[in-house]
Structures are given as structure tokens and as C-alpha cells.
Image (cartoon, rainbow, N blue to C red; front, side, top):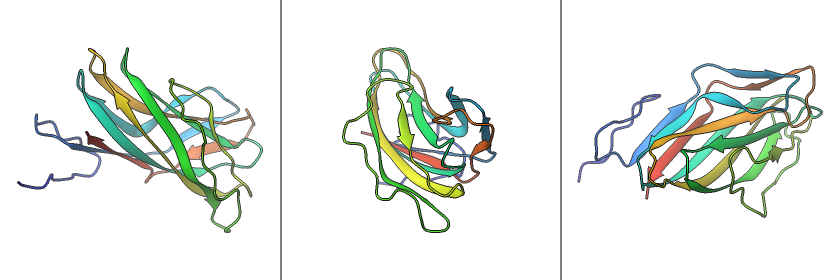
Length: 166
């Protein structure tokens, strides 16, 4: 068996695809808004009746007032389960670490709050699975400020999602 070939920022499109990678090649900036927006580059497509597991690495710059929350959207009729773990730690080594969610999110745009201390660049992980019903489509990672604050909350270049067909 030939191992899959990974191309940064490019989704494989053959019927034998078992892995997909999405990478932020530009920033997503949120200012004074707790409404979710699509995180640029952090998505992958799934076919009807397919099951995919995923891990998303978030690199975010914000402050502890705005904080950060993440979610995802899925094709119509799909079921999902996702949670975060590990926690966000800023580049000064402080923050709320470790963190984990005890209950999975099972609906699109649920409020998955990552608590960031210190107001600098921080990183964390979200993982889960999606099962498509009869509709193919896109799994899209989304981001927002947890509390609308007049500061920039930025999903940084280099954030990524890796997905596996299971």
C-alpha cells in the first residue's frame, strides 16, 4: 500500500483519499464580536455517508477579556462530537493550563470557550468526529471572541486541521 501524499494547503481529490489537511495561510481577525466567522483555510470536505475524525491546532492572539471560542459547521443532517483539550498557554508560559471539556459539543456553533490568560499569542487543540448523512459538504472551523471586546482576536497563520476518513 502506498502511503498518502500530503501537500500543504491542498486537499487530495481522488476517491482513495483517507487524509486531508487545511492550513491557515492568512489570518482571520475578529474585533468586538462574539459571532462566529469562518477561520480561513481551516476546512475539509466530506462525502455523503462518510465518517471523519479531525484534530485542529489553533494559534490565536487575543487578550483575557475577549478570550476565544471555537466551533464548526457541517453538512446538513450530519452528526458530530467535538471537544477541546490541552489548553491555551501564552508565549510567556502562563494561562489556564491544562484545560479540557468534560462534555462534547454536538451541535454547530456551540460555545467552546478557550480561556486565554495574559493577552498574548497562545495555542490549543480541538478534536472530534463528523458523520455525514445523505448530504456531502464542508466541515468548516469557526472562531469568535467569547466576549465582544474592541481588540483584535486573530487566528494566526500556521493554524491547521488534519482529518482522517474512518
